[in-house]
Length: 435
Image (cartoon, rainbow, N blue to C red; front, side):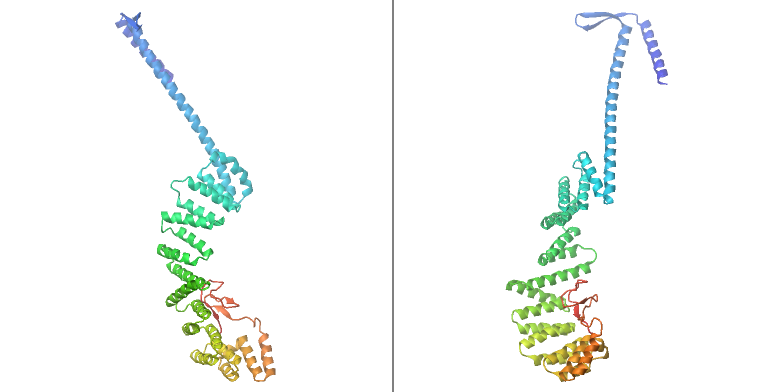
C-alpha cells in the first residue's frame, strides 16, 4: 500500500515537473558562491530545492526514529532488569514469610547492589535480622531507612523505637517515642511505648503523667485506663514508702492518704500506711489506720497487725475488747472468730476461746485450722487424748496445711499475704477466706 502511494506521488511530481518545464523553458543564472555562476534551467532549480528539502526532512526523521528506537531498547532493558529484581525480591519475601532464613541470606546479598538503599530492601534486611534475633542490626537498618525519608514517617519511627527497645536500648527507644509525640502529641502507640519502658524500669513517678495523657487521648477503654492509673499511683506510693530517706517516705504517705480518699476499700493502701506509721514509731496512727481498715473492709487480716501493736504496747486486754466487739458485729465471719480464739489461747483465755469456738456456725467445721484450734483448746484443758484424736482427724484431710489466703477478684490461692494478686494483678484483693 505504501509503495503504491509512493509511485502515485512520484508520477504526480514528475508530471508537475514536466508541466513546469514545458511552461517555463527559460534558463536562469544561479550564484552559489560569489564569482561562481551557473546557467541552470528554472525547472531543474525548483526540482533541486524540493529534493534538498525532502532530503533534510528524511535525515531528521531517520535521526528521530533512531533516537526513539534507542530509548525504547533502553527502557525495555531497564524493565526487564526490574522484573528480574522484583522476581528475586518476591522469592525472598516468600522464603522470609515461611521463616526459611538460611535460604535467603545469600539471595539478599546478591541483590543488594541492585536495590542499594531502597526502602523495601532495607525493610527486608531488617526483617531478616529480626527473624535471626539480631535486634541491634535490625534497629540499625531501620534507623538508616528513616534517614532516607524526608520527613520521616511515623510508622518507620515506631518500628525503629520497638527495635531499639528489643535491642536493649530503652533510653534510645524512649527518645524516638518522644520525637513522635513532638509531631503528634496524642499518638497513642507512642505513649503506650513510653509507658511500657517506664513500667519495666518501675519508674512509677514518671509513668503516672504518661498514663494521664493516655486517658485523655484514648477514645475507648477509659475505665480500664483509669484503673491502670490507680494501680500506678499505688505502686508509686509503695515505692516512696519503701525508700530510706524520710522526705520520700513522707511524700509516699501523703500520696497513700490521698488515694485512700478515692479508694477507701483498697486494702493495700491500709497495709502500706500502717506499716509506715509503725516503722516511724507513730503507733497511735498505725492503730487508727488498721482500725479503719477493718471497719471499712471487714477483712480479718487487719486484726493480726493490730494484735502485734497492742502486744508491743502491753495492751493485750485492749485487743481482746476489740476482738469481742468485732465478733459481735461480724457473727457470721469465721475468720474473725478464728483469730479471736487463737489470740485468746495465746493470752491464756482458754474459756473465752472455747466459748468463741462453740458459737461458730456449722460450716466452720470443714476448715482444718478450726479443728487444730479446737485441739489446742482441748490440750490446754488437759484433754490430751481428745486433742490428739481431733488432730488426727484434721491431718487426714488433703491439703490441711494450706493457708486459705485467696484473691477475692479471681479466686487464686496464695501462701502468704501480698498487696497484689500474682495471677490477675489486682491490688488489695488478697484476704483470709473462711466464709
